[in-house]
Length: 465
Image (cartoon, rainbow, N blue to C red; front, side, top):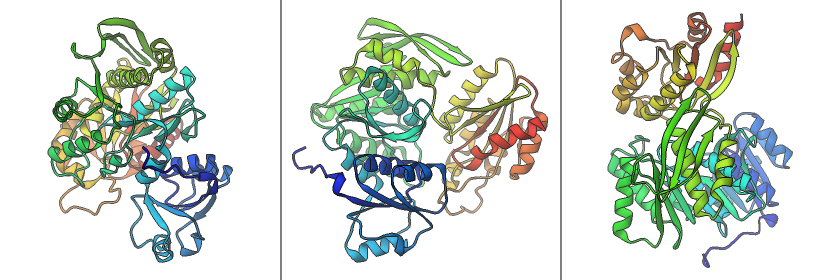
């Protein structure tokens, strides 16, 4: 800790290239709250940018070297190419340029920080821990990859000395954080554009665990094979940290049993090291969400918070944007949007949708995310989507990837029963078809990490008309 310098943000001028992204805007919000003069550029207007303007940030639409000025520091999104004119100008002027993760790591210096990592459930778990700690009265700072429904924001400079961050493993940059504590929800193969094998994914989680501060803590899901593999390797290395586990597994330190899932709620009995604590009730459904809540509860206990207060705080959690988010109800048909873009996430989301529908049908509009992920997981996607009563398959959302020859949503389509799905690359036709197909009591699910989220409102309008 002594080697890390806490910057006086009240004297800093900071420019963000790609300021509108969920991670970047969160860091900008916290720096502005700490007194920094913030400026930044992005390609498109958004409500996020208006929020930053209200904090005094100077925002430019479009990228130009004239936007830069003479800041002390430039922070870049990983989506920004090296030939961006603002970056080139910063390098020419000798201004320090930091990646997003390195900038967030600077904000975490000197705090009791917890980084939440894992292939699935990071956003929800980080949001749950934040809401629980707010209820306990700690007022943590937080930086999360989605808007938390309870607070209406994705980032906040708290008055307390606790800092909760969502730690994204997609490019390995989460090793910059050096947290006091960490949660690892699960470990599976993903981000196949960066990691070819599960062994490579295991390695970056090993590297991440090794950055936890001495006398810190690691919270691990004992139901997940990948997380258990990591725990065994961490124990072999004798890292100077405590390890505690949560899960439905009978050996877990914090154990869930007597699980009941309802359409709009979930509950489980919670025991800690053999002693029953309470029945935990959530205002959202899903077995996976009970596990996310257990992770948040265990991390809160590690931070010294009271168990009953944490459990009460978790009961108040009302969700995060794009995580099983109810967009509206029209003529008895509920439209729900979800970010799930990995077969495991699709499976869990469809299980929740089935419980929510209570005998009505689940009709899914699925947009695969990235060519590389579709190529590797086509069979798994087909299998997971078979739990839906009917699926409309949109074409792949490329994100930043170039097309891979021969890879399209047809790879998934050809492994699915033609009676329960159709390949439909035209969004307007899907909107019309799904609105005609749905009946009162059905659930329509827009699913994927791309622009499929924009369809919910349009589907509701089509049903009404």
